[in-house]
Length: 437
Image: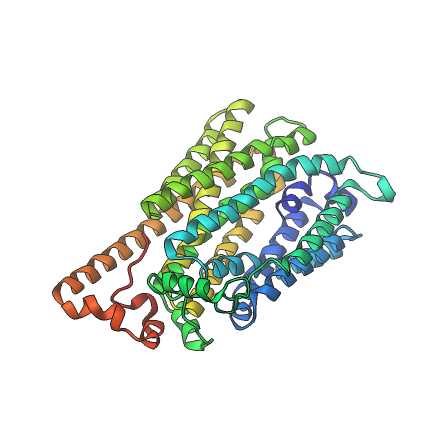
């Protein structure tokens, strides 16, 4: 998926389809508009359905649509297919994050999300190489290089999706690859840590809980700020690098180091974060690294120095996103509320992505995207403020609940005495629940 996002403009799609630079940005925005519209419904369907069927089916349809993108002949076809790509991809990432939450304890989830998100960054590194190589197929079979990128990418995705039907797990309580003793042990681990072992029926009350929880909105606005820089950087990385004075083919290859460094930064930082069981300080620190990168881009004049700024920006932006995307999965209970919260986070976040692809207009590349880079710093500072709010509020809530338990011995026994129904009803508002900060 990263390959399709970073390769298009440099290998001639806009010229062949007679798409102007502003129309190209509109095509990018349509993709995220579909994301915003279908994110929450997709996770509600997942909660009422089966991930073993739902997630591979989304991947299969995405692959088919990607192949179709390589067959478009005009601007209208590009706009329509970009919207369909967003529809088919909308439920995948939040769905995967949610499935992690029913198999792993809270402190174990961030590392799994980091592996998944770091894999996407690493795919961007290989994507730059593949885009360059596949672009050399220009003229083969009477098709352009950019057409082959989408067709081959789509075919590969279809093949992987068919394998996924046999690999992606169902709900933990229905998992056939676990023996009864293994299920018992899994549920004991989960039950002592979170709601993941409970069999929760879908109820709209949990949807309402998510929609009215200020922390859920906080996670969403946190990603909103980070999504602006994530998608503007990933989508326009070749254009930004080309704007430093490099040729198009060089720009494709030079996207490899930033994406590779981003993947390594994600895995290293999240590993440390998991060891100390803290999230907010690392999210704020990642924003700081990204801001340094953008300042270098703005303040320096040479291509080499500005490329260093790109490396800093990529490391900070991708690392912060990997951490914050796992945060609601660790801190929101009950299950349906968490499914909606994860989807809401990406929905609100992708509104920031829409702003990013519209603000990074191609005509600004002549000025090395100076104004958009300044706006990116503003969005990162906004994310820092939101992270500070979440950190402060949850730390205060944890201390208050600790004090309440210290005063009343009944509260100390309440986790054992609580019925599953009570734990479901109260979720993360339960006196024994502690937030991961």
